[in-house]
Each structure stands twice: as structure tokens, then as C-alpha cells.
Amino acid sequence: MKTALITGASGGIGAAIAAALAKDGFLPVLHYCSHGEGMEEMAQKLGGFAVQADLGDVTSIEAMAETVLSRTGRVDVLVNNAAFSLSGLLTDISPLQRRRLFDVNVLGTIECTRVFLPQMVHRKSGCILNISSMWGQVGASCEVDYSAGKAAVIGFTKALAQEVAPSGIRVNCIAPGVIRTPMLDYYDAKTLDSLAQETPLGRLGTPEDIAKAAVFLCGENADFITGQVLGVNGGFVMG
Image 1 (cartoon, rainbow, N blue to C red):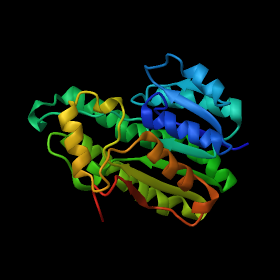
Image 2 (image 1 turned 180 degrees about the vertical axis):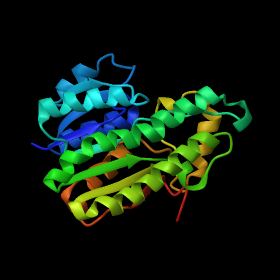
Image 3 (image 1 turned 90 degrees about the horizontal axis):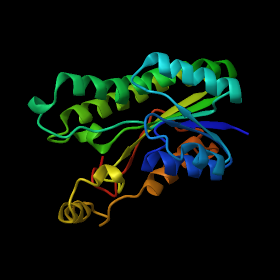
């Protein structure tokens, strides 16, 4: 059985991707940082297990990799999904907040990839899927740091795809649009309705929309696709 590690699996999108990959036949390894309640139970229901790590801490990432590889021997699919957002004017975000965002959203993605990449290179097989955002493609006012970090994930995806393609490893990226997860809970109903109306398909996305795209990009039907950014946004951002 192939193994898939999904970071940030305690969140809406991560949980949906984990469930979809498990249904597709993968042994799912569910990563979480601080929201661990019920994670082991959820992982067991999906036929896998849960692991904890602070992705802003390289030592913690390396310890997680050691645990996962000692239990599974391999990671065939790595989904770098863990991230958080900051809203506010650029001048209102503190240096400490900004550092934490980039440590988790950007360096966490890079370091997770670094620790699991060697065993993929050794086997000349593997798939890495990074979760960015449509704001990483076009930018968003009052989410400057988040947009910059997600743009960095896109650049990382394209560069790494070229670097590891000769080793048979594919690297792709999904750029979600407005997805109905707890991250949107601080918006009122009027704002959410407005966002749905701004989306050409007329609704907000769901975690399952992202999960369907993830299963495709991680599967054999996408074995000639690498270095790509797939927008799953209902038409909110095109091109």
C-alpha cells in the first residue's frame, strides 16, 4: 500500500484530502500541530495514523520524518497543505507574526519536502502536491504577507518540479479559491454571500472540491503532469 502524508490534516481541506486519498487506496498519515483532539481516532478510521509536528521548527519536522519513515518505510505522496492566514494592513502585522507565517507557510513546506525527498529520489518515484492559494497568483489587499507566502509556494513548486523530474518525481500545486472552511468563520453571512456572487460558478468552494483535484494530481492519471498550478476556484481567478 502506498503512503500519503498530509500536513495540516486537522483543517477542513487537509481532512478532506486525507479522506479522499484513503478512499483511493493510500495509507494516510495525518499531520497536525496544536489541534490534535480526535486526530488519532480520525486517522484510525481512515486506516492510517496521526503525527504531531510544529512546521515552523526544523527539529520538529525532522523528528516527524523519522517517526513516519520508521513506521511506513516510505512516503509516496507528500501533500504540503498546512498553513495559516493573517489579515490586516501590511503596517499592522508585527514582525513576529510575519516571521511565524513565513516559517510555517513557506519554510515548513520546503523543509517537509527536504526531509522526505531523499527516499523518493532513491526509489525514483514520488509525488509532491503543494497547496497554495489564488491570492498567491494575483495578490489580495489586507493579506499581503499571506499572498507573498503563497506566491513563494508556487515558485517553489515550479523550480522543484524541474529539479526532480529526472528522478521520476512529480511536483504540482493547487491554488484554491474561496473555500468554505472554518478559516472563513470570521466573515458574516452578507460577506460570504457576496463572495459567492463574485465567483462565476455562483457558489463557494468546498474542501471536497480541493480533495477531488488532489486525488487526480496524486494519481496515475496525472503521471505526465508536473510543475503545474491548478486553480480550483470556481472561475474567481482565470488564467
